[in-house]
Amino acid sequence: MMKKVLFLVLLFSSIVFANERIVVNIIKNVSIPNVQETIDNAKILQKDVNGDNFTNFLKSWKKVEAFYIAGDLDEDYSDTPRYMDVFNNLKEDLNSQMQRVIESKDEPKTALFKNSFKTINALEYVIFNDNEITKREKELSIVILNSMISHLEEIKTVYETYLLKPTKDEKWENALVINTLIASSYRLKEWRIGNASGNSSKFKNDVKNERAEYFLSQNSFNA
Image 1 (cartoon, rainbow, N blue to C red):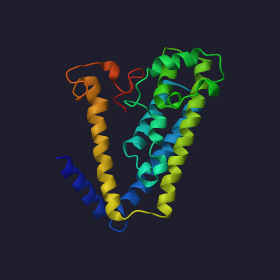
Image 2 (spheres, one colour):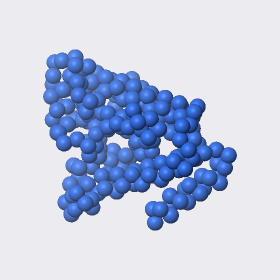
Image 3 (cartoon, rainbow, N blue to C red):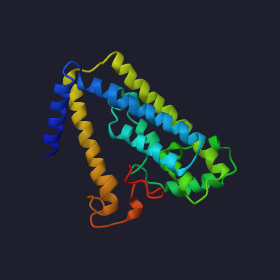
Image 4 (cartoon, helix red, strand yellow):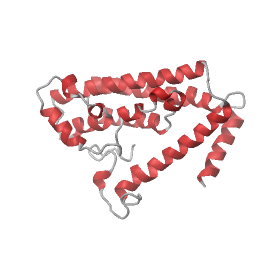
């Protein structure tokens, strides 16, 4: 069924954008606008750190992550998503570590010395660990967002560079679209839905809401 859906997506795209390669069109009309929206929402969140602005930033970031191909276009950026989002890719207890960061007397830039401390997952804990967002937590949020904005700007540059001079052939690009959609669908089924609901192979019949991607902020559905 998935293969049929992917085939129809490619067929439709080929008909609608007959004069333009599919990946080029996606980058121009989807990827770059999504990255820019995420950058804009990150800056809004920096100016006013609150739950609603976090949700808007999160929703725009998940659009970027869902169809992330910058690492395939330029292998130097293959690990960039893991510098921004460590869901299901981290063995350590990030929440307890972020609590120590909050309680630390170190300057925010010093306290946030690990890559995992500058991810959206860390940001969620800083903002939603209790019902109050303190001055310290706002300062930490701004530094975390500075790091994420920097990565987003790099992603945008990769896409813009590829538009100027595509370096892959159309067959490779079409395969990239299919493989990216398959991988994204797997992460949705196994990680974002399956892990919490007990339907994944890893946590079969073991339901635990705390495994949801954004349990603290109650944004798992939005993701």
